[in-house]
Length: 203
Ligand SMILES: [Cu+2]
Image 1: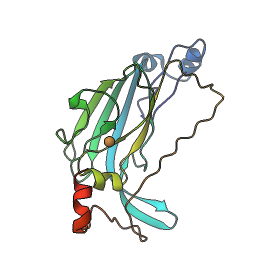
Image 2: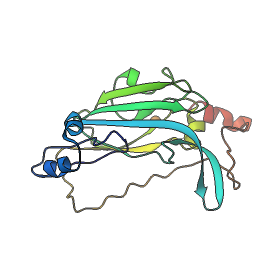
Image 3: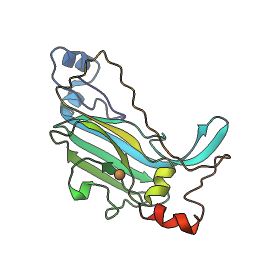
């Protein structure tokens, strides 16, 4: 099995499974490819963008590589993951890898914010027994930044994935973006009613 993630670094991931490796090599420079075996290495930038989430209406959103939701991160148990993160937002942020077991420093907690204009490289290994579906999101002003569009899916696979290749997968991400009918932000830029404030600020 081989798959490419969203980076422009070239190939990102591959497994040695007979001649499928050769097929991958034929379209990718070998040197670049060999560096990536068992490694998922991607670039991820958070930035403010203006996009349409609803036909005919544009909103100022927070996006990962210009997308809401952010790109899907795929890895397998045993892989090493390297995320070159850049914060192009006008405020601090983090990337928290929700549900994955990894070192505290790499967990994108509120204790390790990435300042505007700064970069941080998240590195961690995917443990055995992790296969499943997860998501990533910030942990700085969490409700606001998630509500503005910062979230994306993660799929971790068992190297011996029992699902046949012929099966088509669809990942469904349901989100509760906070914009009004005119596309205006209704969570970050507004003062929330007192009765709801704690609920949002303490998440
Ligand atoms: Cu979370």
